[in-house]
Amino acid sequence: MGARHSGREAALQMLFQVEASGASADQAIELYWRSFAADADPEGRAYADACVRGVEGAREALDKHIAEASAHWRIERMARVDRNVLRLGTWELANRRDVPRAVILDEAVELAKAFGTDESSAFVNGVLNRIADALGRTSEDADAAAAPATPDKSREPA
Image (cartoon, rainbow, N blue to C red):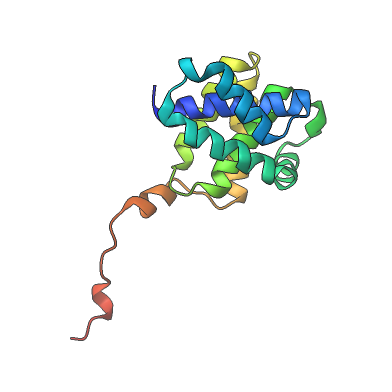
């Protein structure tokens, strides 16, 4: 399991805790690592913490994207796991251009399968695809960010 994958799992659990208990992001992070640090991937910790703080800092905007992309579903009526997987995936799509769209969607679907209901993965996949399209995320985004800069030969003098 990769560091980002384990970080996303930890982040989802912390986001669930924030929503269920009303704890702040920092309180949930501190409690999670105090309770599960021995079993956690230390490389995923920084990614998890950044995700939790990012999602909580942008929650209203994330929920707006989710509401617009999930026709006929009010966000408060969604299962808590689905809602938090969607928030995490939406935050990554909006803020982590270095991570390919396909990876973000695949990871969200895997989280939904692992922690949600039988219908969660299809629901999450459909909503996040619409959000990715609305945010202008294409499959080439991360490829372009990762590719080395090449000089534009057409601008060189002849």
